[in-house]
Length: 534
Image (tube, rainbow, N blue to C red; front, top):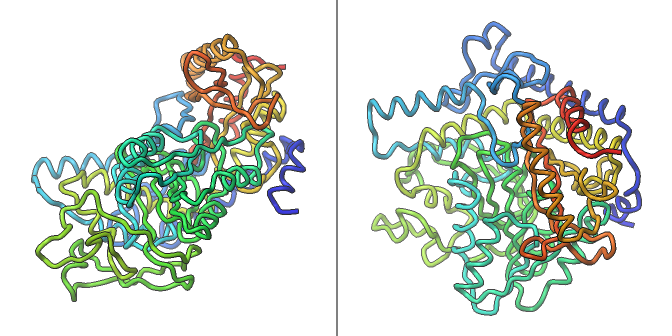
């Protein structure tokens, strides 16, 4: 029996609240320890933190915050009384990053500079935190920007097939629709199971069933924004590689939440947000394209200058890079947005779609004109904070806090109210900071069959609860419309849109660095006064 099947067997198990709280508090301790170690590295005590921050990779990094109830709560400055739990839509930058961002804009206003570069040095510094080569990581405008640059840079023929899911964000839906309309690509949508019908094994079975001789690529979101469900990214990407398929991951929510290792994930392409869990400014993100296939780790001698890939002999820095889990051939990729394609300086990178592991592909794709350097620098500062605090420790805290939240919810509404099984440490799916649950469905069942009237009423209930949480308790969540698995037929899903809509409208909750178990308790207490419960 594989791990996924074992998880399904234990799907009715429930983690006790006390055990989940203990895990969250233990993770909080580890985060505090990681922060103290980070401070020691730079000889910083409490007084020093109040005055100045460390310099990392040649750039001024924001200051780590002093101790607080949550390990990092005081690094942010929310409106008084606000409990913001909607990172899945947009994040909030730490106070020091906001101040630096404003100062950078002021400096540019006082002394305008048409082309103010620096991204190569930033990519050199942050690429290890994402488990990739700086030659592969582009600081994009957002997830949508990255997905379109990826999809439209690939070669498509009429009749090619794309496997995707029924729960993609608008960007993924738009990309698939454009490929269908412009190139004649056939889109195959796999229905992702929800609630206690979910298992990694079932997801893989459905994806495998969609495979045909004409399949060219897979495109999927993880985590899924509708449900918070995290799919088995590595298994799906390596399965695709074994079948000669291109893998594209919409990881909008992963940067800043999970300690990413893109080489280990095995994806060919990845697009993620900088403004969500990574807490950078709006219109910032990450685009990754795999540019190697050697499973052995290596050291990249990366240039410091943005034009180092064009001018030999400029200074370089050593960047350690992990080996690749995906050792398949590199897909042909054409740049869709760059100043340097076919330039007279002799650059051959991505010329006619060709590339090799020694090509600084990211540098060519980064040079698209005069973007917002202050915004990209602010994103860089956020990344350096996360790297300094320790991404594995941050992930452990977020996941443990989400486990505590789910245990509290299950203790009241029962395990069927969650968007995926309530088993502790349920494979990969539960290693996430997003939680979706439905207190509005009959029997507090995420997968309850709904009539059109019930679906409409549920949407109204959820919207009212959202407004009341904000007005009466200062708590910000969001709702989603989910084509959930039907209790009457685990192979079928609810209708998501249109006159016959029977989809559910659960609440979606984001727990992040600046939250604590006390914040979770405050949320649950508020919910008990506003939404149906046993």
